[in-house]
Image (cartoon, rainbow, N blue to C red; front, side, top):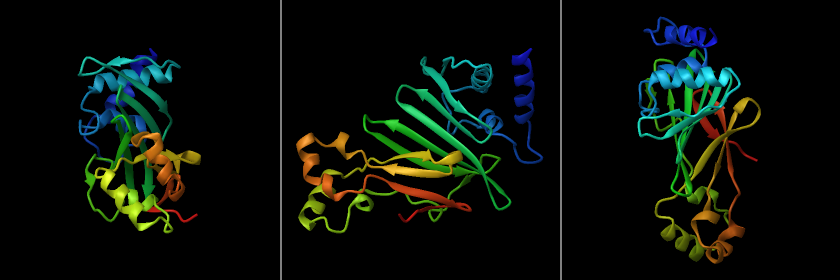
Length: 213
């Protein structure tokens, strides 16, 4: 009976919207495949049902692997879609807009993240002014010698930066650079004293901006 009720409630969310979706579970079920191409809608409904029943059950995905719903509340969820990819979703209000902020993190093996934002109909907000992912330069302190700065920029031609929701009610985002896992131990020792451990971001309407400490 519980599974039937979950299916009935979330199936309504799959119908064309006349208003905005209410919960993150509905939005998860509705997502058209840009974020969750490995998970069918039936698999997502099963994941929500298992989680609401107090079970963290792995479900099969389209690559013959397994996916797990790790966290879920009315506004936030975290899904391990495969052994190498985790997705976090947060739904929030920005003025009259319902905004879905999505962080996709892949293990390369050093974690690297991508952040996108969508409306309640899963149409993407594409302006570059809404969020700028930090580069390695943003983690460097001003006193870093120029020669070390140039050397690191050459080594980190493809910077890997992890993003994650933090704070009460997932109301902030933290960026970390992961250089200690990318460089050898001896290389990292040369640079370690010239880096901020993380950069924090806060929400300001549709924009996600760095927070000064």
